[in-house]
Length: 405
Image (cartoon, rainbow, N blue to C red; front, top):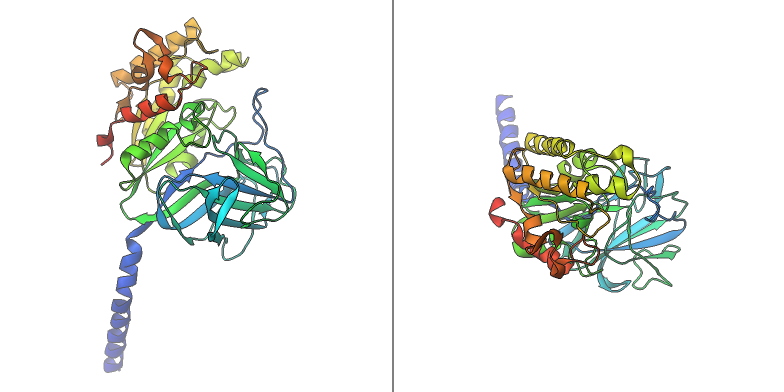
């Protein structure tokens, strides 16, 4: 009996040894977000901003621009703000050719637990199975999602700065969509992750419309996080854009506050290691500009919110940096009281009282040296609060790359 047990032990040891190389190879791979967009309610609640259009028997072709490549890809679809369960009939992912067309040779079906479709409960999300498709740095992808029944008002990301497409019927994976309508928003899709070498780290850009790229050239991928990714040259560092236009630190409006979405948009991101926070100007300016006096906040309250971001990042082993708030003179936010708050918050940030791991002085980078309360005209998109492409590139150039090991 002892001999039989010894023989069995040797056989098991041999099997384990034979399997060791595969396990070792798997351990060298991890998932990292190559593209992301923070989910928002389809109802903005702001009269000058659009609401999401309900979908029914339609295919959405969502064009995205990953900043990091890999040999496998998986996507996340969100029903975080839906009012009913979301039925997905089919989905696919492909290399985008041009416009609404895809490269059929580089198109793959997406499955969820081995199934072509998935039903996503209210408040939940669905992570796809891995798809073997080479994702190249800076090459556009098209994610198709067919929605066979009424969605109600769907979860979306309203300010994409990217053109996507919708059409009637199931046309998932079609090379050319029939009679597509254009969309300036992303529906349902919140993450595109790729397989990467273990040790790859993510930098989450947490912010408002300035991080979302408002004022940049549509379809050009000229947001400041895009430019930062270009500077990093994809060297095992992925930049994850989690900006929400009109987003705030302390109050919900078009999307959840930064404090409310920090777990989902930062801590839950695979391989997130760093955060660059640029948020607070809407806390200062939006209540007066949009008639919400009960949501007025002080500079001290904004600073307390920053302390919470710092504490939650550090508790989870992340390093967190902050950007100073950009100039606002000439915009609807540019009142004497608002400017005083902005200056107070920026002085607090520059003084280092809160404990951020570093400060990037976006204000000093983008303001007019001859008139520091306003943006440099060469950097101004025209609304006196959002930079243009050149301004966004200057912001990215101001980030200290030595922060990222």
